[in-house]
Image (cartoon, rainbow, N blue to C red):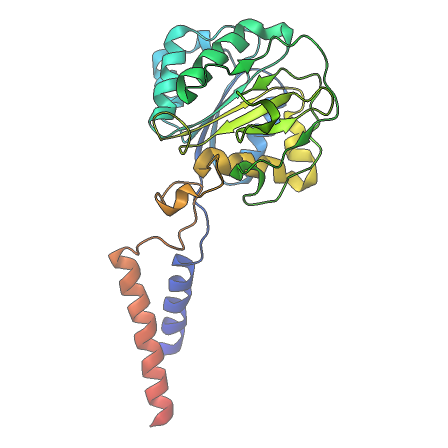
Length: 287
């Protein structure tokens, strides 16, 4: 009767070191229908998702506290201004190691774009960052080849088509050649999505993605087996702009795997039980 106990202990030990990523707590803000696809995909990853089907100005203090306690905040409230107090909360949230996804759009939404620009410039220190205010349709979008982990972890999506539909500009200083730029148009060459990790943000913490289109967000899930969405989710939880890995220094982030984490005492005890069982079995065979 000991053999099943030994195998169970070994199975438990194997699971403890299998590198399965943890689930995350997600808040989604906005009433756009495209956000329902994003909500469903986070749920498919096992994340705990709360959808706030309204704009920032309609949220009360308890709701805002819950939102900015999440691992990831994904917003698509594109038509309205972001209240100054919420902008401050966004900045504090990223500085506290949160992952923030902001949605820009073209001229319909320049009040919102300008507020995103303020948040982005404050967090990145890039006073040349431009969000929105482009005024023209752009076509021929693709994911770039910059070193940011949003393009390579866990999937290599460099060069894949990005189905942006008349997006707004999201252009760091350096444009499409910036390390932060991960989607650009063909002609003219304009950056339409950018991502900053803790290696470049001023407070060396958190992650920020500014994505220049609401309409195409379901395509992140629907195209290429959902690889594009998975990469953005992974970046928001544990990404770097320069291609490093924040998991090396903070392996307990929800987006990290636990391969190189220091085992808990309980984990070591279970591993010891499994090894002792194997030893007992070997001695019995030799007897």
